[in-house]
Image (cartoon, rainbow over all chains, first blue to last red):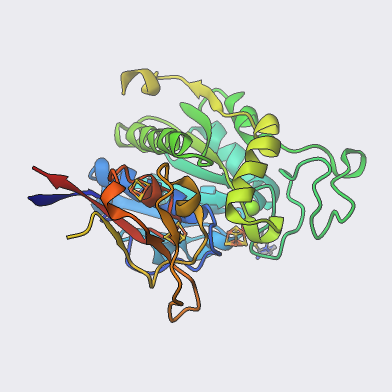
Length: 253
Length: 70
Ligand SMILES: Cc1ncc(C[n+]2csc(CCOP(=O)(O)OP(=O)(O)O)c2C)c(N)n1
Ligand code: SF4
Ligand code: SF4
Ligand code: SF4
Ligand SMILES: [Mg+2]
């Protein structure tokens, strides 16, 4: 009897152990990116752009080229890379503090220009790296270091829905929101990330995948409880689904 | 050769694999790794279907899965 390998570390993921907290979703999301790059066989021409946030060291975790941008500016850096090296597969990997707060202008205008890049947006409703401050995506009533009585819409506004906003623009070709709170949803997230990179490989426009994610450390919950909390509290505010698929990549796959 | 192989040095003891295994055949080991973590361990490997739900759920890519080929 021989043994066939069913699952192991994808080739594009380096052997460096992640520095993330136990149970943090960043690790699975990194792996799904590496699996998509491997399946599309573009590892030799992929360039990632890391953000400021917990995933600032993302460049250590992949076996392809990487850059690291100033806070929120990853889409601008990715624009420069893609325009000077149009054959490259260029993506940004950004948290909600990076993309939806300090980097709002960069993401909106990169999307509106239809830059032929892919954006992986990890929305965990908090600033993880800096110890759990309120983000634009923090839920109403959610307690953080800077909203100790819970986020109050009358002073802090409401959670920003980036996917819905970006889907109102004409240029993006693919805008979808996924999560990895179960294996079934994880497999859908894998497909969405694959679709986003496939569109770029085919030379199509801007693709955006929002992953609703957990931050067990700053949420103060165990990993499994965090996924349950996400399901019950985040998904009603950030519903899963595809908001824009101009070229029908989900049907063609 | 095993169907379920863990790299204990990568395991952070988050418990996600243990919670998600449909057959409930994963549990914490009773020894500590050099990092001070009680790693995940398989309790009844004969029952394992090699579904890889645990491995796909592991944020630290600590588990490899193999399947018997007849
Ligand atoms: C110009 C600048 N302003 C503020 C900071 C502090 N800072 C570092 S990370 C971060 C937010 C990170 O949150 P997010 O993007 O959601 O990533 P996460 O850690 O949650 O994955 C902030 C405000 C900084 N490094 N640089
Ligand atoms: S602080 Fe939160 S987002 Fe950052 S590594 Fe820890 S769990 Fe993950
Ligand atoms: S492969 Fe499936 S059955 Fe085997 S331990 Fe993992 S989750 Fe359980
Ligand atoms: S999911 Fe991975 S890191 Fe978490 S307990 Fe299981 S093997 Fe360890
Ligand atoms: Mg965040």
